[in-house]
Image 1 (tube, one colour):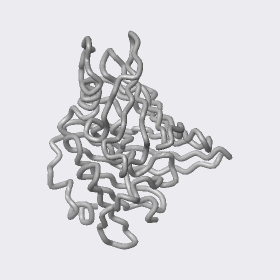
Image 2: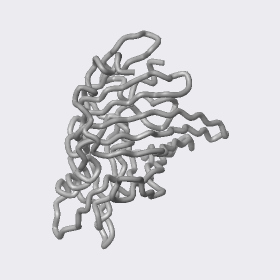
Image 3: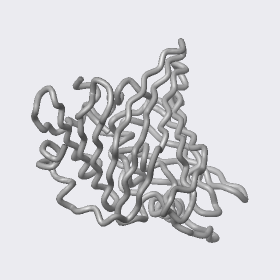
Length: 252
């Protein structure tokens, strides 16, 4: 159970938020990354219901559902509501401060830094993936390639000692600074994982379409994981008091 300590809907940070931004000439890599970050986290708050399914190359699969609330760019609360991990909750205050509530222990514990590279519920997502919401705070960016439609940004961790990956290669669309994909490399430079968003959908009360189907593929094992957004609400006025360790344990 300890190995499923965390969630930053990363994966959810990877969703395209509804904000109109237009491409500009001669932007630096840092400016591009900042605009993409703003597109992801450009709302006061958000709430989603999500289904995560981990698939094995041999055909086995397992699914869980959870609810995720986010306030601003970093505060995030996730509660699992199905399967043997029902009741497990995770609070992210920032990239380096994450807490978990495990019903079996009935205690709130801080996730140690060395546990951030562990897999989430047997999936291709790590705790670090799910804890990352703002890429500009965690990575330094350079432009590796571009054409008329997109930029390829090479992201290098600012703190390599604590980093799960050696680098990321991120594809960002020029029209609206949308995140179009990520290749993950280990510290030896080997490609280990790929991320691709898919299936745009218009939710009630939301101005623009969102990517509702996210796929992560383990390049080495052939296993993969999908995240499906089942519902979405924006700017509900979520209170800051929801995002506390007290609420993590008692707000079920």
